[in-house]
Image (cartoon, rainbow, N blue to C red):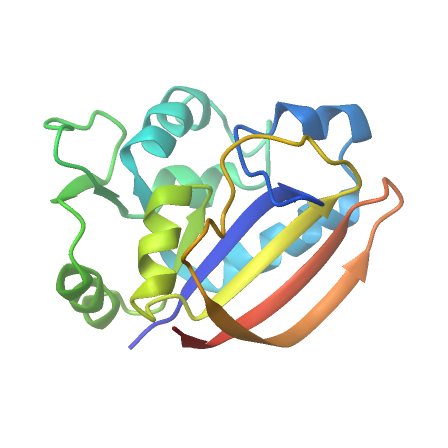
Length: 183
């Protein structure tokens, strides 16, 4: 059975909203290496509908020359948790239907390797609560927004074990954790 590996951009106060704010800090190439390392371990992508609708038009147009992540993002099987998406156009995409812990467990068993999740806050919160996330890689930026959707909203409690940490020249840090228990 593969693992679910989550990657999130977040602020110090935990906001994960569409991270346009990260552009003010630039993108340290070492961050790209870390994200690429996560992707290299994976054989499929899992995302919610909103993330799918943001990613599909952008990633489907990119080539390896544009971004080294393009072959993975475009060539890998993509699974979307959604009750409204009916006919995904991005190649290798399929809809799982409404969120169901059983459907995610079944996907983990079917995919021959790990599964990558980027963004998809609503989906990730549900999977953390159901003990389905194996690793979470938080790229924490040195700012506080004071408001916005947070990854860990009130009522979501979990315990994590540190796997790795790394600082970048743009002031961001990566904190990699394994989920040990959801409460």
